[in-house]
Image (cartoon, rainbow, N blue to C red; front, side, top):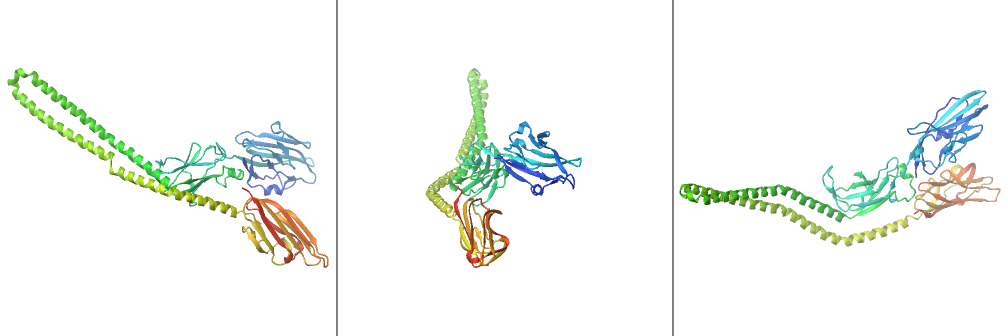
Length: 512
């Protein structure tokens, strides 16, 4: 459904002649209207004694567009333009009603009234700004909260690993766009970490607190208030297992350390490859020197000294090769130490310990969940009981709300004996009955049963001489949470005897 924010302002053409009604002025503040209902603009007015309406014109200027004609009123005939035929109707005076309004019909609505008074024509104008509010929509028509399988690292702030919750999946955030709020197991309210691809994301702070996490639309959002009672778009809850969550973070950290170790080992692999290349080059040099000795055997005498020199050089090369081989072995040992570090062994032992502890606690957690569900069922049953019975504490005379009452029964604490008012604690169907009588000759009982100031039942009696009379009111009412019901005396000469005046009510059934 949709809602409209309607803001009115008043422009008076003068102090004589046409006067706009006080009712319109009282409703000039912001007003919300859900889509599918009608936009009613009560532009009522009164005319001077000799003044009459010649014609009226209604227009609308949509956001960012030119002014468009809606309807006209000439010779007592209301004529809407063809685009609004069947949807636009004329109310009293200058009022109009547009049915089934859409978000495309936001804009500045106005009425211009042309009156004639003793031959003089005067124009009067009223305007109203209408803003359409759209509700959010998800792919499956409900709000879904999920815990992602793997922990994620927050590289934008603390670079730590976190348990990751998502709430969605939205394909339209409504107009204006809605946000969500998160409720933690200890009752703390959090905002989302970020929004991405139709989902609101929440990264849980460390250490993770296990329990129920709830994602919900803000209750004060105009779009949220348009949703029907019990809508699956209002909220959803997921249970986070504390031990499993912490285990996933530890596994993510271990994988990160292994990846970092591999990155650190890459330069060592390059050094080893370079040393192997240098060793091979030296070996080739040695082979070349040996070949030269063999080719120059005919000059053995002359080159004997040179041969000895080559042998010495060969010995030096062998020593260098041995040194390189030792260096290679040292680098291999360092690589194995890095790969199989004691930190990896410690993490593996800690991981195995946590897994064992998690297995021990599985049964205990399941038992706690079953107990929680049982207690929730008992609590839901207990909170459905609402009833009260009270009698008038002392004589009451005159006009106003009957008070005070002596409370005899008050299940749910919804009735106040001091104020005499019952306040509905939840949505549902209620039954109320009250009886009253007077013990004074010539006195009246003029009693109304009221719901939020609206009379729903009436009793009126009068006592003549020694004849006692009684009156009663009763009603079955549907109330939303917060609506009020009370008894009202509507005559200054009313007189209520405390012994014969009582008030009773109870909840028949509550909404799911």
